[in-house]
Length: 174
Image 1: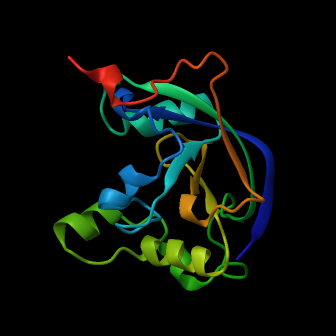
Image 2: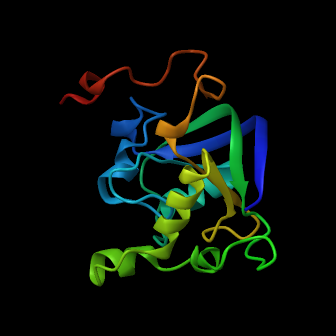
């Protein structure tokens, strides 16, 4: 496994507006799981550029739902750097299945996705996240952070100088 330090990285996420009140939370991904996290494991999925953040949020829809684009500044150590993809000389064989169709495996077949085992392995090795190529945008890079693994030596700051993000759910009362 290739572990690196991410220092002074800018990342982005397009949030469902209602949940922009908790931009560093990984609770949404913990509810049903994600590519690299099983249910119960909080994970924050970010992109390293705005176009990738938009494409990841949009997924396969031709239309873009409303969203709140948020910027982050972060320093995290260590994170697994999977940006070059699978190489048997660097990665254990389970990493070859990182891009499995985790949704079909879990939701349709009730089979544990191999990518969850990858996430578990990174956390067990003391890793706090995984950098990986986006499947939604060629050339884009994603970062999943395991928020409960972050420590006082890590930094995850939301860039919101004007305090524009909603502070609580009362912002959405109708």
